[in-house]
Length: 502
Image 1 (tube, rainbow, N blue to C red):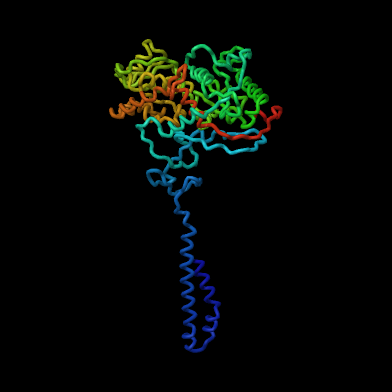
Image 2 (cartoon, helix red, strand yellow; image 1 turned 60 degrees about the vertical axis):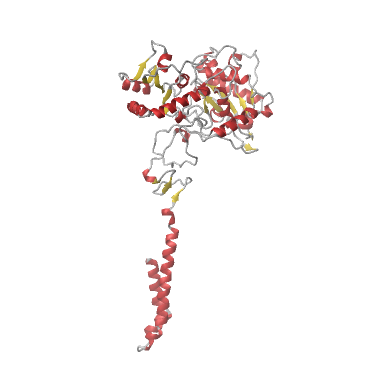
């Protein structure tokens, strides 16, 4: 505005009409100068009006709405699904996996085709991580609201895709002979799987005898790396300390003998492991860790080795057969936990509730049958130990008890398929003192829905010698099918390259 005034004064002083007016004698000149004076005033008004309008237009971004791609932190208004809030009034949520290393390809990569679009029944959902000082904006959800009473995120889509997966998914397994010195870790075992890490063995045994296997690599969607971390860990020739070298050498050998690893840098390969030592096993094989699909029980996205969305959570399930009598169960206790005190979370839980008459917590092994406590409790606590995963979720579901998840940064099994809010309760470690209040705030109607849904999802967390539709094996296969891709790359496949295993 000031600039407009200065321009007008400058023009007025040095305009021809002004000079004529100042040199005129008598009052006759005043009438003559009236016309240019009027024109000057009119021009001034137009200039002021133009500047006023354009300044509002050019400065509109100060009042604009912020869309998801806007990165700058400001006081912009942000549209969320339910309300209009200011950015400086919200706490951006940043999870550990936001900083997970991106999928990297080996040197000299040249794309031959683009990836196929993955079909997903629902966007991945995981527990909320703790907030930090990051300025990354929290994007509004673009999906529909989920009905928390429904077991599946999108059941119709899941059932349709499940049929397609059953018909089309093909997996090639790198072949090994019985005479191989490490056949015990590379081939299926004949004995019945048992123990805490049975999921790994169950999956391999069932897969090798399934219709998903193809002996023609050109038809394969995925390639299975068949080494068993649990077997190698207990093998005196390898042990925990020798695992990284074994995995490094195994990848070197298959990349020398076959072209399939080098086409994608391992992005269409996967391995399965339930023991947490698998994280250590990949220390000398970064391409496995960063590129391959890791199907693991220790699915904590707080730790750097697990890459959420690329990797997937394998349910840790203690093998059981048959079904307990759930109809006669009398659930008189509010909640139950028993286990070793091998984490701060467990110690905090037992310390807070050890003397409570309704929440039964016990340090160490029980003297009474474990099953009796599971059948006698409404809620069964899955509490983080050394790792975020334990077999307690599978135990809870098997005995019809509603699982309470006390394990932060945990990618729960099948979470992009199943709506965990419909059959479990998630409590953060910091809310342990409020546990009783949280559980008692659940109405009898909501409790009935939760328990009814527990009975619906039990079959998805059970292993069978011969797979049964929608059991744990088929659910893992569906997760793998969602991660398939037709990407093919040309890479530097010379293992003598110093950067080959970097």
